Structures are given as C-alpha cells and as structure tokens.
Length: 203
Image (tube, rainbow, N blue to C red; front, side, top):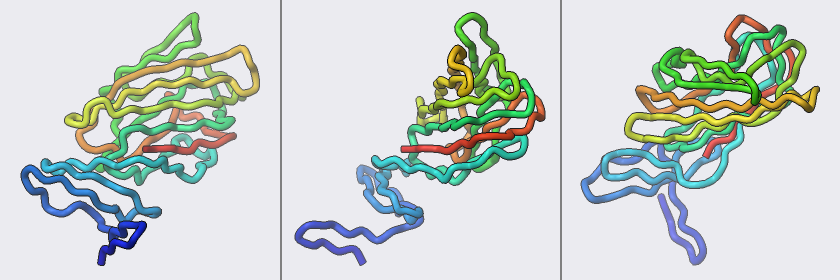
C-alpha cells in the first residue's frame, strides 16, 4: 500500500502503468532493479523520469557484444568504450533493436577521421581505418529524436587509445518498429573482440 509521511511519498512498485484514461496522466514506480520513476500519458506512452542507470561492464568477447534489458521510456543511451580492440581491421558497427530483435538494415550512417570517411546502411558505422591491435576509447551516444516512430540519432567520438594522433567521429539515424530494448556492438567482418570492455548509461 502506498503511504504519505511528513517527508516522503511512498509508491508501491508495479510492472507497468494502469489502464489509460483520457485527459489523465499517471506517475508510478516501475519494478526494475533498481526501481525507477515513470510518467505515462493518456495515450499510454511511458516516459522514464530522470536519473542515469549504468549497466555492468561487458568484457570483450566473441564477434558481437549485446547489452539488453533497456527499459521503456529511455531517451538517451551512451555506449562507453574502454580500451576495446578486435583481432583484425574491419570497421566497427553499432546496431539497435526492439523486442523483435536487433535490426540489420535501414541505417543512415557515416564515420571518418578528418580526411576520409565511410558509410554503412547495416549499422551505425563508428570507426574508420581500424587496424589490429589498435584500442578505442570514447563514447557513442544515441538520442531518441521521434517517439512516434522510434527514430534514434547517433553521435560518436572514439580515439585510438594506444596512439594519440587518431580520432574517429561518427553520426547516423535509424528508426525502429518498436521501443528500443537492446544495443549491439560488432564489426563488418567476423573479427573477434579481444581486449577492453563496453558499458551503457541510459536516462
């Protein structure tokens, strides 16, 4: 049961908002771990309210690295790269997905190093000129541009962690058929991630 004290309002957690009512909104606490505060409008759209959640670090492994369980209502996702490297020289991609899975087409993206650039439609391309055993440090950010069609805009800066004279910049756009639930890091070949780690921050 919810309760009000002299200094706090205590709301019991719920898995989802209640039924929508015209001209009424809902404020409620989602039963995440940890729990999070939500507002749901009268059309049934969930908006996560404030706060930053940081996922556990995912160590380099295999040919793809996927972090899921992104809750509804998130408007910004930061992918943090810490000394990540691959076994060979294929360019790196970020893909996003909803409850139907990771999407592998329909991306508009470009990445470059100041002099040259490359594009991709099968993911957000986030590097240019990768060569093993180069390391990459930095952030690729995803921003929810349009909640009605789940369009996400990417923006990224990565440096070569073991050589100070290389900086990759990237940008892109992709619409999903549903709410974002997962993010994947991979490369254009079958190169293995062999050092470093990634993590997510979302809000």
